[in-house]
Length: 193
Image (cartoon, rainbow, N blue to C red; front, side):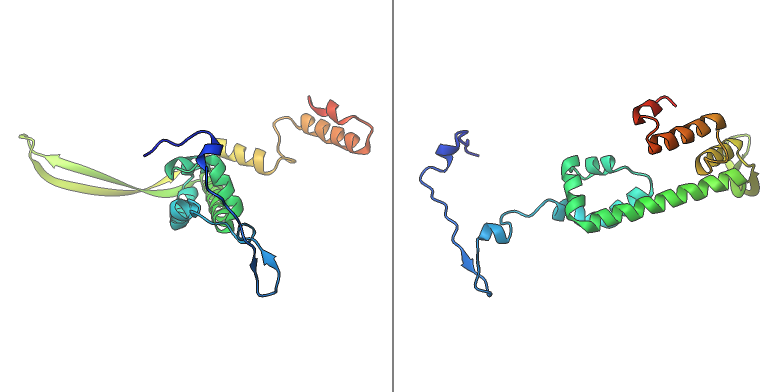
């Protein structure tokens, strides 16, 4: 590959670039640059668009957008631009994140209430020489007891008004917010409460 000159004046020496206006059907003239971009298409068409179904599946499994960028070899700024310019990517990510969140909340409620599950145990029976004689498979139905930590987590985060670790702090914050909204308390004094 030949070296390119770093001086822009010498790069295009002797090359004259002109843009000529074209007439549209309506009679007005627009330049080629205004009508649409020319050149190589965005990498979105090659690196992201064909894999939208895979991306949705990964996000539903908890993969972050940063991990997706690394996996598909796309920069974070390019990823943000792709989301902004291509509503299909933004919509796919939004729906997958909502499904992931819904599934997490359902699993949290399941753990907090307790649930039944099936456990399969495979037992190998060997003789004195160590040769395998038979294999027994036993299936047990077990019960996972409600998890107190998950119950506390759900109560504190889903019902903040009714269940708080320190209800007095919640009341003080509410009063300070009301006073700040009425203009009786400067908004910067509510930081420590």
